Structure formats: C-alpha cells, structure tokens
Length: 229
Image 1 (cartoon, rainbow, N blue to C red):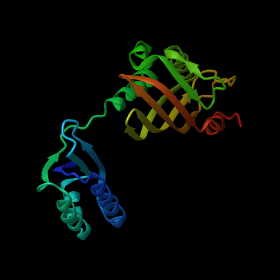
Image 2: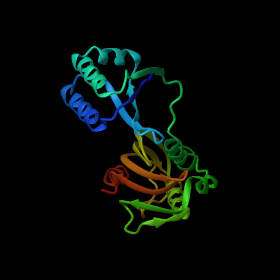
Image 3: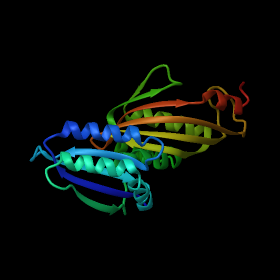
C-alpha cells in the first residue's frame, strides 16, 4: 500500500531548505526509498510550506528514516524552520489520476470495444493527432474515428498497457498491440495471421478532454508479421 508523509513547516529561508533537500537527494543516491516529493507554498502565508513525500509502503518509509543522512537532514531542517515541523502519516486508500482515466477510455471503450459514440466525450473538438505513419496530421474527433474504423476493419485487436505514467497534463502509455489480420490493410489482403507490435503514445489533456496525441510504434514488425516484408 502506498504511504505518504506530509511535512508541514514554517520557514523564512526557503532557498536554504531547497539546498538542503538537493544535498540529501545527492547523498542518498541508490539507498533512499522515496518515490516522489512535492513542496508546496501556502498562497495565504508565504512562510508556510508543505512537503508531500511518497513511498511504496510504510515499511519503505521506515527504512528510509533509518538512513543517517535522513536524521542529519531533519536536524538541519529544524534549524531552518520557525518551530518544529509537523508530520502526518497517511496510507493511500484511493489513487486516481483523472487524465489517465480519461486516456484509458480511449484504449478500453473506443479502440478495443469500438464504441465510437464515446469519441466526442474523450477528444476535444480541436484535437491534433501526430502519427509516425501518417504524413499529414489529423485534426478533431473525426480523425480518431477514421483511424479506429480503419484498424478495426482490418484487425481484431487488443491493447495491453505495459506501463503508464501521468504527469501534469500528459499521460504516456507504453503498450503492446496484438491483432488478427482479418481485412485488407494498406493494400495487403487478409492473411489470418496474428500480428504484434509495441509502441508509445503520449496524450496531452486539457479541461477534461484529450487535446493532442503523439504515436510512435514498430510498424515494420507489423508488416513483417503480415508477410509484407
């Protein structure tokens, strides 16, 4: 279970605290168990800061706390703060990134299930699509609808999301695509062969819609699997 520690503190020396955190990261390279750390400043009180530190588990956090550098950093941080920092320990019971959920509607509902009625719910009216195999970028939901129709007419396929990372307004997915060649594709008659390729798609989201996408995939392997090369 993911574990989050919130460190709440007051300081008039934020630059010195940042330098301290940078030194800690450098000194604990290869040994610390921290997955991510975010420092936020209170808009209503410029000396009030909150550091949100994420760990894989509570046990990982306890292991990190036992590093001598962690204790030394804490002592130095206390000296830079106005009073003692406050700690809140939290077990994460729900972890959702809304942009990732939006992007996965494309893979699950539109691409694999073929529900084209969902396209306008997911893709913005001015969506811009960059595809390594298309010499001209496609625009709008209609471009997605055309591509999905073409691929589904030629293959019975599925996506496996091998890895996915959501950061700010971008969602990057490393995927494996597997399909059975059932219809004509790029002038190649159906072969009935099972084809596989890997790829990466980056979607940029804005206002709860996908606004832009970049596709990179192993088209050469697909052509080989169909016997075209």
